[in-house]
Length: 126
Image: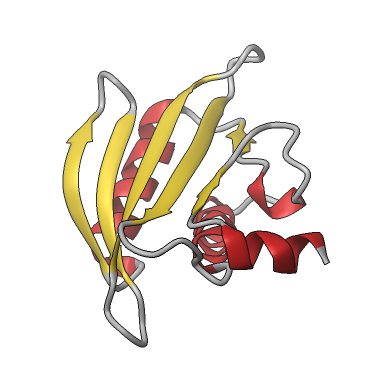
């Protein structure tokens, strides 16, 4: 019920280490930053589909992209933040936000979850 209520009242999803939704807990990979950065860029730039790279700053560990919804082709904003965690792993967190509307029907949370699952497979972890 909570997931349904959020889908009907929120238009933004963001990862956090202790997020109540396990799909939105972000990731820490015991993989060098440069390798994770390259994998994320490859996904955003083409392998992931319906995303357009807006900006990438490796020093800041930040990638911004636009994602387009399937049915109505709405444009949503995605930000990927990367850095080292306290154990020396590479931490990846995302924010996905709809530009219009007051509810996203869960699209942003699903987009983040799908991206992280794809990144896991790309990096051959989990």
